[in-house]
Image (cartoon, rainbow, N blue to C red; front, side, top):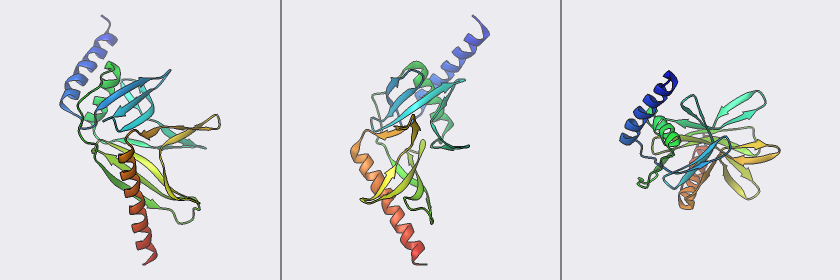
Length: 186
């Protein structure tokens, strides 16, 4: 057995041991693409366009001109290890906890017509998802992570659970309105 195979085996064993002890968000579905993965967490949210590189997980980023913007943040090392292990082993879980969320960042933009704020949501204290609060003729709405490829917008994140989506988006918009009103009344 080569040194590389032994190293990979040791990594997988350590990840298995760690993953069995951790994670409130559980991988409940794995979809293999040509070069990337999609995962569903707690049967509630889906992250698309995930890569496995050098025994680590690479989540999608947004590229604009010469800048790269992170759209996802894994908040705990143990959760990162759990995700890597689940993808390498194609291991899904049937037991899940309730998907909890809290809004985190909220940065209101003053000079932008359509984009009103940058925000983020943390799910089960494991992963943070960046989003934007947008204004259209129909009102405020939330733009979740996506990327343009060949002139078409491709989703990097989506909700499976529509009730969770409604609750998250209502909280984001309520937080924006409250903070914006507070700024205007100063």
